[in-house]
Image (cartoon, rainbow, N blue to C red; front, side, top):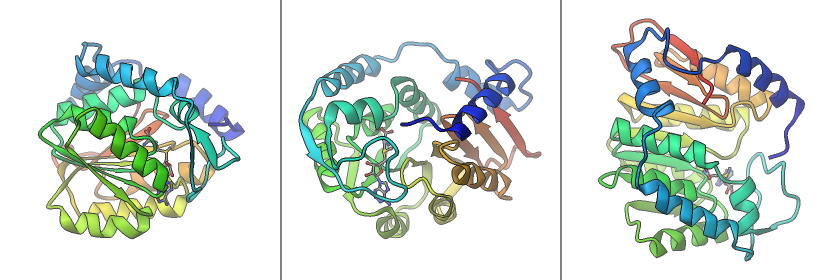
Length: 264
Ligand SMILES: C[S@@+](CC[C@H](N)C(=O)[O-])C[C@H]1O[C@@H](n2cnc3c(N)ncnc32)[C@H](O)[C@@H]1O
């Protein structure tokens, strides 16, 4: 991702304002998240295998053609991209994927939706985090959808449902088909309007313990405004800004709205 002025400014602000551990966090649930997720350095065996898969992808020079969607990409100009480049620049880092893994594992998320599969590496982390759960992932680019589907099959990960579609077209139907949504991860079409639209649509299936995650909240001013609006929504009781992504929770036991920033 090419870094812009808005991101640099926001990163500096975040660097000085964010907490680096759970000290002084009054909300018991947010404190637990610090201990069990953000600053939990225990070793998860799945990470060894996932790291091996990442290394193989980083060495994969195969080119695939991709259609550009939504807000597009600030990094690539051509439509042909190497798997190695997509792994390096268009995929969550190990740290981000591992945080997501720990979150799903800790919250025992049964039904998760990911908007933006890309090569499907992050999807594998999500699926492995709860082998009894299911991840539904949507990708508009046909060759990425095919690559990710094959990657999961090759690695014998079966609890993922891959959908090839534009988000706007598939999401309403996907939501209609599930009883409840435990985790919603938005990582594509980073515009103000689209982000708020996905948030509002997904609210219909949230439960008391759901978490919604928005990637790249400082990607642009529009994304930051969308994040500010999401935090203000009356149903949100706890919001956590981890710079690379923002998380919101809807727990009724959190009586007063809590807004936290963590450096992870
Ligand atoms: C940043 S990548 C996803 C990365 C992945 N979630 C991860 O963490 O590694 C975003 C993906 O969303 C897809 N995408 C963007 N806008 C879309 C839209 N409106 N409909 C369907 N797919 C879209 C792109 O093709 C791209 O592969």
